[in-house]
Amino acid sequence: MGVPGKRATIVGVLTAIAAAALLGLSASPAQAHNSLVSSTPAAGSVVTEQPGTFVITTNDTLLDLDGTGGGSAMQVSGPSDDVRYYGDGCASVEGASLLADIQLGQPGEYTLIWQVVSTDGHPVSNEFTFTWAPAAGVELAEGSATPPVCPGSEGEAGASNGSGDTDAANPGDSANSGSTAEQPSSDVFWILGAIVLVIVAGGVTLLALRRKPDDRASGGAPTGRGPEGSASGGTPPEG
Image (cartoon, rainbow, N blue to C red; front, side):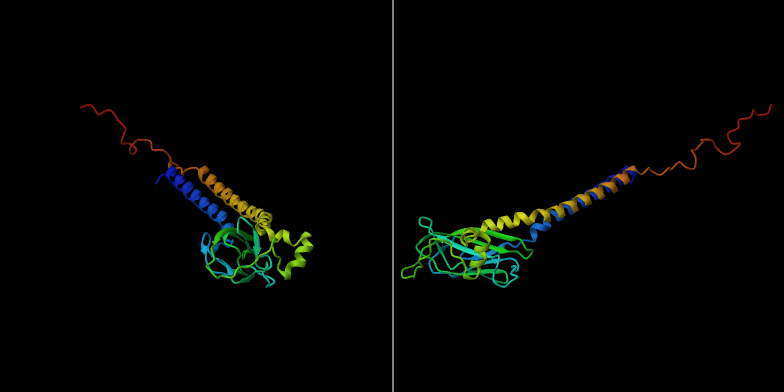
């Protein structure tokens, strides 16, 4: 392989390594967050019996430092034409799942909002709807006009917000704000690492391109003359 071919190979290999590393570094932070695996009830489902215990299950163990489900929440409200809130505002963490005991009220479409803390410490939240169509004879809950606050967290919520209902009313907002506050610092670290890697790869490529090819003629150029005396063309002796 000639020198130009070797240079092209070096450039190609370094470019591929840098691109692969950049993609890997960019994907790492996102892969650390927990994601929803299943729920009870399921999103978009039609429920005919009281679920009793609502469950959100993720792909990894949830963070619960104080053992009381702090930082996690579940809220169920509905139906859509006359919104009321159900449950007592309490939720517990068991491994990779968030659980809450909730009884539903009048038939209709309900919204479930959930928030958990991922293993990496980032809050994750989402919401979905389901339809409540109770069978005949199913006991219905009355619900409340305002979002319930778990008795154990009422004082803490009131001290931080002046009202215990604000965070409970929209746990998705607190999850989003938490992610927004912490995510940039993590992203900056990975982006800087990727930039450094690309710069190093570029420097190595530049050095390879600037190397001069070996001087294959360093031993001197051929003269094109044969051995000494072989090219002398003396006049033949006269006969």
